[in-house]
Image (tube, rainbow, N blue to C red; front, side, top):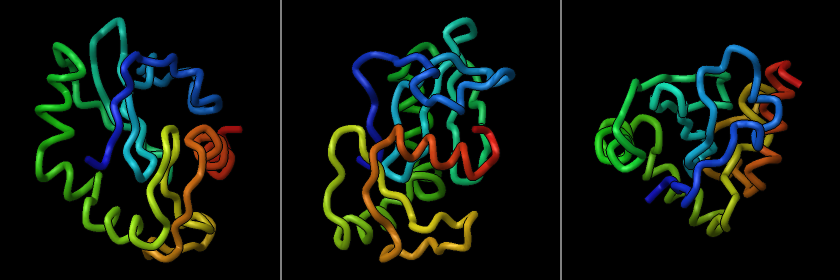
Length: 141
């Protein structure tokens, strides 16, 4: 599985600079191994994915639960191929090793700073460090 769901939703504030006015989500419920944040809005029960490398959110709408979102979106083969990229993650894992709890693979330097998406460019970093770095790159910090 190329994503992690948390046992308890965390307030979006754990992502520091990504917790900005106008962001329609209130909590983080998981992340992909490539650093996408799986987010949830408590008032509306909407779920989405934050793509920090490209500074974009995608709202997938309301779902009854995290499990329903997982079953209908995260485990969808097209979503996996396009977003989670299991073959890419496997190539990175072979070179960089396994990520630990709260860690993700990120390219260094980031593509926004001229880096590449090649598996050999990836390293393992703490999720909160990744959130802070990408927010700074996109001028959110």
